[in-house]
Image (cartoon, rainbow, N blue to C red; front, top):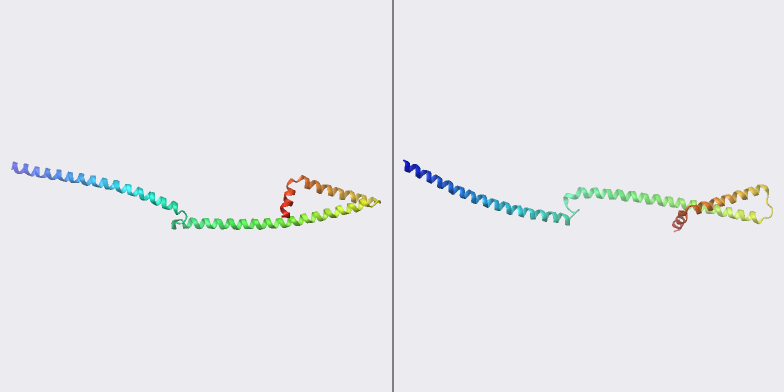
Length: 158
């Protein structure tokens, strides 16, 4: 029986060694395959990233973001259009005010010229002429004290 036990032990031992070698070869094969698959995966991820960069904004997953951007741009366009309309309205109003001031100034200048050309000045007329001169001085002072008034007038005339 000793011989049969020894023979059975050797047979089992040889079988275990064969299985160990087989397991080692399988493990080596699987490690190599895993490494190859990881390399392929990295390459694919780089390709996907490059594709997404080339097609930024065109991908279906970006639809919601694109719609939000579009809505913001439309709101900005609306606000800008309203601001332009308001500025145009202010321009019309300012042009009207400038025209009124010019007419008033021309009237004052004409009145003062008439008064100065007449030799007789009444007491009440003298006060009126002084008031008119004061108003003309104020108007000319305002125009010279505001450096932007000339550029504003040029802009309005355009």
